Length: 113
Ligand code: 5GP
Ligand code: ZN
Image (cartoon, rainbow, N blue to C red; front, side, top):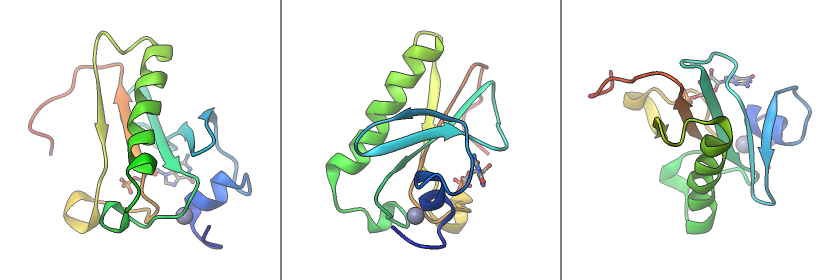
């Protein structure tokens, strides 16, 4: 855990968020600036700055599996959804605690911007 990290603080419930799921390893909450009808951010409870620093397969894999669970629960698993991990500047990472975006509920374009 990092004292000043925004997502660590959400994990510790020091900053309010709409938590939609929690496992032993991960917390999932609604994005404060949603880009689609469903936009959930899924983070590991342990502080890892970005995918570049990740070493534990279960930590990263757990994000994806929880995303699929939430997608099913939200009713977008069949229609489709996107999962994204932004890493560093060119991808637009703004919070340096690794996280997976679950985005769905509308048709998306490819390639992404
Ligand atoms: P990134 O740009 O790093 O891939 O994604 C960070 C995401 O965190 C953005 O989509 C942003 O809207 C979201 N975010 C930033 N601050 C907060 C916050 O305080 N609460 C919540 N729920 N989401 C946040
Ligand atoms: Zn953190």
